Length: 199
Image (cartoon, rainbow, N blue to C red; front, side, top):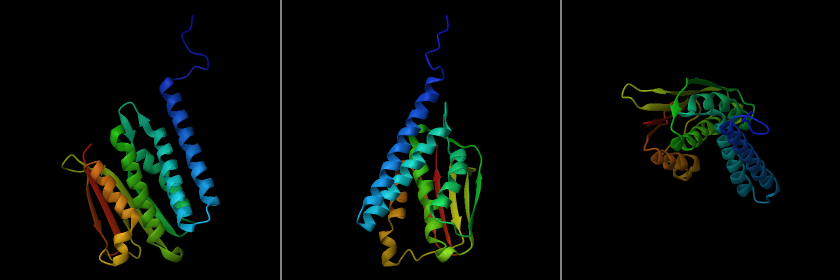
């Protein structure tokens, strides 16, 4: 007699599928709520939450028995992030192979990547200017892993008063400490953001 349950299938895959569906629903609710908000800043923050939830939901598709394939996640999500920030001329090049990171770090790293790529596309190329964003993920000679997001956009002055209020950079720095990573930012000839972490 078959031991398969009604409906069959791998229990782990089914759980991942249900989890991804929950993320999708939560993201849709946050997006709908933003559309009903009469406060532009509140609407913008709710859209950020919706995008973050959607990105975490996509992460579920790249879970394996040994962790999460962060490279596969980046390859899937970067075109999505590009569409979210409008149809401008900036191109995105992904140089990321299969990089497995622990489950305990995956969500944090996914949000960092989303924020860095979103910042490059959203702020580096005003008025639809042409350009190139390079995203690299891979091992370093010292055994650690490096995530790099570099753009050739307009850049910004980190010493300017308004730079201190950049939510994206604040959250990236905060999340970097959670994975015990080293975060570096260079703002000459565009912006280069580099996160070095151990898995």
